[in-house]
Figure 1: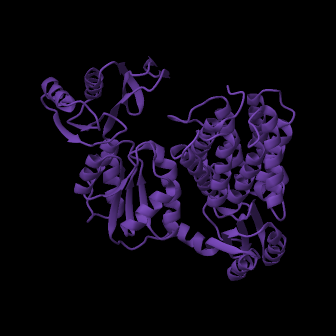
Figure 2: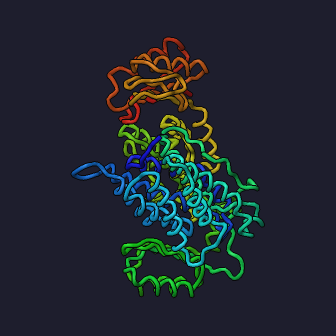
Figure 3: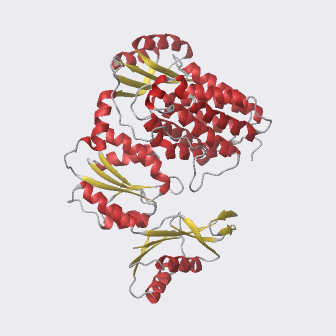
Length: 543
């Protein structure tokens, strides 16, 4: 348990919040009925926090000369990243909440500073909204701050109290906002803030964002259903307009007044000359012109609600797009793996070691593939949330996309082996999914420190054998652990063993294991490839 927040804790908070929002993204999208039932609140919150997390990571990845990033630098990077990447009404409000948090925590990370930060965050969020409405993220933020002010002396007590209070406040949002009660749901934005506060409590408790993360709260929609995107009802503005604005503080009052006269759901967050402007209007051009009158608008995004709903309906299966050229995009790390995928007909997105691509990178890679039908092979469980957010955006652009949640490159290669571009899209996706699902996967890794695992306690330098994502074997040598892993996997049957050597793997390791497999089970065929991945000395697949 931490007694004071520091820069590494802020980094963990961002990572844990991104993981939690990624797991809850579709659920939050389904809750989204206010202010517009456009089914994207979870995605918008995820993209906002993704941008915040990326900004923090960049400070750690490239700290420049001098000492490592401190608390003030980390929280400011988080706030600015959220502001620049904020999406939708809820995203801009959350970005302003994070900005208020950062302003207080820049002076210190103790329990009293966190109490102050939560109150300033709630106040900042309310001030960003032209017409605050109770029963929303704003209410959840206010109640969390109020109860945190009454918490015990410890940093952990403050964070846990804020999270519990936010959960309780969320449960009561249908009592405050009739449209929530009518639809049998809690507020979507508030649900996202609960996830962010839960991640904060986890970071303070010292939890690390590694491996599977279970949501800290058990909140679910009262009706557990996937809601279809619907166009706004009569009388609601037709467009959502959002842009970044370079403008002096003194220009904001007039801008707010002008935009308030054009539409509703007005949120303006930011400060120090950079603002994120969000508004729903009938005249999108006038909203942009208002920004021009105040300063320099850029990164302008205009969404027509009815068209977005129609595109979503087509993507959900209410209309079948005509067959067009197809591409398979495979995300891999390592020159050898990339070459294998390209030889099998895939377009490759090279993932940097230790840094899975963000949703924006996945979206850009699919666009570069220039295909109207795309099969996306993730080859990493950490990419599911980012891929889901990217796929939602691409479907709105008319791309027919199927995300195959392959958890290892060996599953991706198995899927590519049965890919046939001439088949109907759905048939090709089913065949590739079946091939990937029939491939058990394993990898060898070296422990970086002492840790509890499914196979017992490991020490730094131990070799770990992971089967289907869980540690199954702990040993001292790669060959020894690899042999044990392979023997366990073949115990469940199999006809083909694929061994992919990583960068720095000892000479002859894969060949030794392949010979072992052929000797113990003559009916098994074994193939060896040099993948060059840094993440694991050896990847194993059994089909």
